[in-house]
Length: 170
Length: 201
Length: 208
Image (cartoon, rainbow over all chains, first blue to last red):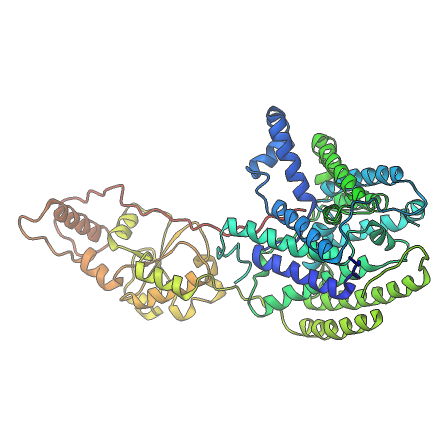
């Protein structure tokens, strides 16, 4: 199957904006991602080490406000993201197990940096109360000051570090 | 009318179903725009592919316009939508850390799940990293609790801070976004790479 | 192609942006009830409070009770219930009263001569989403009948009737009705109507 072209970015952006508006209209909230991972973490810790949850203030507060961590809007939304991504990939012939990287680095390097980036992003998203979708995109749509600040910090830092990380990508 | 959940037009469980459906739309659009490709995402920072900028800002502008028009026609009560609170230090600190994660890992959380769904192994590694990162945050929470809660500013919206209406600010963002798109397309020509094709309509 | 798409996008969003920048923001609060829901509430009569309950609260000097006379100022001057304030119906949306009618501490009871005007006041506040507003059942007319000039029950009436009569007569006396030499009012404690707190709308939780 021939790999199809990607959507026009402006059309894609407009559609994404419409999805965002639907989310607000139905549920009064925007899109997000990292919150789902946090719910999964808390649910996991709760299952594996219930006493640890009892003894740690952070988990305790979280469980108190979210009695069923996995029954959260973001968890269902992220399940949808996986399904939606798979559908699009299947239609366009992009389903393939692969490591995507610059031709100049090895798979091992790429995976190592992917994990490192994930750790930073996971940590940063908790500290910044939301990731690119939850804080920056949604925050900007509702004109939240926090959304603009987070967005600016993410992109400024990435631009500032781009030179040092160039071997990974170009 | 909206938000439906606040006005109790739909039930909590229906809300979860809608979350799933909205997620499908979100994931589909991300993938169809190539957000499942880390080199495409990273391309934004080297100028060879600025799709992220275009999609991201078009979505934010359309989202802002959509909310304002729905409100104008009385279809949504903007008092009941969630506006994320602003904690100045952690917003900046978190953003800086996320920016570093972005350039090293090539994904953000939403796009990594999307990329993993079509079989990107690096995205799965990135997701593993996210879980570790969150676990570090939750386990060590007392260490950064103070920083996390410092400089709480409430949930301000930018137009109130600069003293204008939502509509005027949105118009301003539209103009800035279009200017950035123009720069982005210029950059794509200037920094085009032999080993990378943008491949989009 | 891409350049064209950008121009197309600009051609769509710039005019929309200009429109949204030019129009005033829609700050009106949404009506919270559909007509069907409203009809159901009106039919159910949940807004009514019986004069007995109001009299009882007055005697006990219940601080949560706030009687609101929605008749004209003239009528209010001539006769009003104890401790009531006057907010004529035509004036009900005046911002100076919003602290009185939009709150969730006190139990507001609107009254008029009959129930029409009070009901209208209640419907307006209900649609605005205000809480704890009620209507005096039967209005001033019924109040006069039941509390001020209670009709003595016939000989051999059931006990409750007699108790009710004594209570009303006592209340009437205490509240300035005609003095009748009746048994002292034994006010039952349970008659206090609960302040029903309607579930407050919670803003949606977010977080990424």
